[in-house]
Image (cartoon, rainbow, N blue to C red; front, top):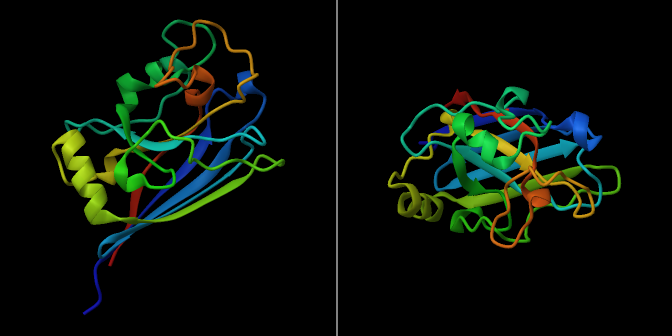
Amino acid sequence: MAEKKTVYEADITPLNADKIGTKATGHARLELQGDEMVVTIEMNGVPANSQHWLHFHGFPDGQDAQVATAAQDANHDGYVDLVETEPVSGTTMVPFNASPEHMRVPEDTYPVADAQGHFLYQKIVPLGTLRNSFEKAFHDRELHLDKRVIYVHGVPDDFKLPDTVQGAVAGHTANTTLPIAVGKIRKISES
């Protein structure tokens, strides 16, 4: 008997594009089967030659997360920063870095875009370990992917952001955490 397979996808669209000068677009696919989650995220139009943090965000209480839009620019500085995404998108939950299952967000193991502003992230994540880490952090073993959104973050360190842009995390500046693209995760199929 074949193991159940559930597929989730997200179309990732630009955020803050008018300010950063690039339109980051892409697609994410998360396949859960057995004790594995196969993650594929491909992006184009991101700032070139830069590392880009990727995560899914959501609400620990099960509320359905939504993508942030320009309407979330609460301080009207022209940027939607990490802090301003939280009312609609929730908190950072699982990073898509070298080892998502350990849920260590501030790391330098995220994908780096090439000179054309493209990257392809592919990772096989052990679901048991991820669920244990998730339960420790959020008191729930279920990932509830269809209630989450994916964010792509990051502009180069030398990109000048106004002081009003917030989001510094564990020694990383708001340049690292500035949201540049977002997509709502939806369930595509279950077999």
